[in-house]
Image (tube, rainbow, N blue to C red; front, top):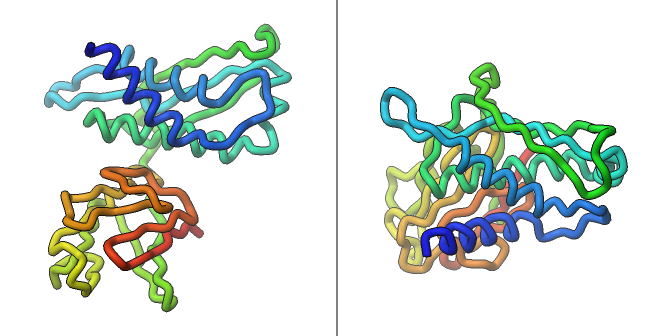
Amino acid sequence: MVLKSFEDRLERIVEGVFSRAFKSGLEPVEIGRRLIREMEASRTVDVSGRALAPNRFVVRLSEEDYGRFFDEQNQLIADLAATVRTYAAQEHLSFLGRVSVELEVDETLGLGIFRLHPSYDERLPEMEPDGWLEGPDGLRYQLKSGVMTIGRLSGSDIVLSDPNISRQHAELHAMGDNYQLIDLGSTNGCKVNGQRIERHVLRDGDELTFGPIKLRFRRP
């Protein structure tokens, strides 16, 4: 039962990130699954009791697979890193430094075969997040490090003055060079691109809906 629950969570995370099809003998979703399995197999606990997962992942691919991924390599790396961050947030895992995913060619590998090498690397400093939420009227809410609150309360970092917005509606958590939106049990919920979510790692262009208010997440 525990294993089945883990498999179900894994599938939801990975399938949620990789909604696009890549033309290759190797599907990115397979790499995403392996990433999560390696995080589980390599997780540890530091002296303060904090659960840690590897933050650097080197993916070695056949020359043909690497070539077929080349045009979308940056997006693939971003998606793989988002998979790692999403799973870590769900499982309350921390990192020693910034999450890094690297693709390398291994000429000894055949089409569809890959090797994954996870490691802990504190030499990778966290990057300062950079982004904003954009309203239909052109208003921008600049995002910052740490946790930002969204709600009707005047003390919120992002104040949304509408009776359909809960006093404490949601939070935005900076995760390295990315953000995760977390619903705080609001009455009318949070949606990303029309789908109701409890927590979601944001990507440039995502439409966020809080009650009747729609904002768009933007990166430079």
